[in-house]
Image 1 (cartoon, helix red, strand yellow):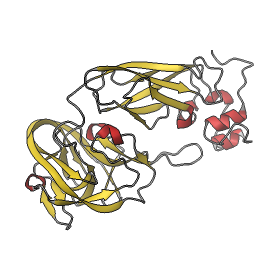
Image 2: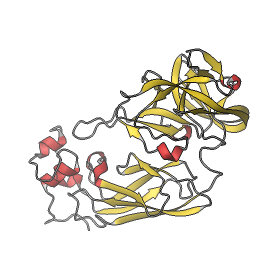
Image 3: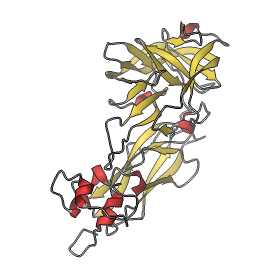
Length: 335
């Protein structure tokens, strides 16, 4: 129901909802919650209704990632940036298996659709509970969105990098991808917490706040095949160096590097995303862990030969982008 005179809007509950405190019983102040930088009211953090959730495409392709957004009615001016940014206030799920996976699950969650054998119905679900807005309609209730996952031939698709792309070998020399042969040994990386899989949905939800445990390694090429491909992307750096890659190829990125929670904690994460899911603010990650700014991303329609390469056992390799050594993930064998 709408906020009204007599509603209980507790300060302890507000501290918990905004991430300022760890529980509703810890003492806090409105000045602490706001940072003391402006005049606010408790009502600025309120909502009247958890209206719905909505996905950007209700016929999502298997293995692809889509934003799912929570809609609130009459949200106060401080609500989304504070309470809405707290992942613990949102429980995301799917009502039937295989579920796919969620990432960055605050009021906007990134959902990766599961691999399916035929077009399959799924119901996405979110339950909202912040301990502060318990007066709101549908607080603590299921908010559902129906989708039909499209079977597209499975997994990560076809091609990866265009002919001419240089791949780093284990002896620190470069070799053009079209000349890579089976049993070549390429430079790779190992991340202990990363799931060991070539299949994108298996690791799409993985994320980390640091890459301190990433180490340089090597991997053996077990597949490399070329074919003509049409739609692809050009990723361009500030020096106009171009990486040509198909939409589905996973790259290691840094995201939310300039964002912080209300308590000052950085929201920065590392994760894998497909090229079509890149945001303008994302940074690609190099072999030594350095984040590199993306200047421009262009979609191109035009036939070129692209190569799909699979390496084992570390499932990653390094491609050249200007003078940078950029980390990329395997493609699925046989795709």
